Image (cartoon, rainbow, N blue to C red; front, side, top):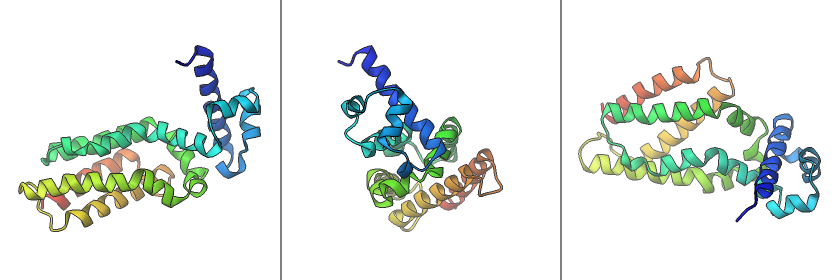
Length: 193
């Protein structure tokens, strides 16, 4: 069982790293920078994390964990328009609640540091599988009018992820709420023409 002091130190490390990651790319921030900012010894850092990579993965897991769990359990949703709207509403609420952290993760190029393949293996591949399974069940039951659930899963995950990323970074002339409204319309048209 962790002590209160250990939990506080763990949190201080994460807060220090987040603050530094807001200012620089992950690859430019060193363990020495993190321990100095957190006001701890280097050995204390390594008591909590095996490496800077482990800290970065922990940070991502913490930020994406709830959304990742939700996507993996997408099968609990039905296929009616209200169900599709609920799914989009969840994503939009999640993004709005974590906008600063998501911006930071993109601005400091977490993907570049950890490797896009590693990120896809850890998260995105699971998202495809969950969405594919959900779509295949909808097709089989006759509730969705799609020819290829596997392709549609890739299409949805990649396109939604890309539009959300670009909206978060301000590359698109839409607010996240406007994107959510358009996604509801498009999902309904794609899956239930």
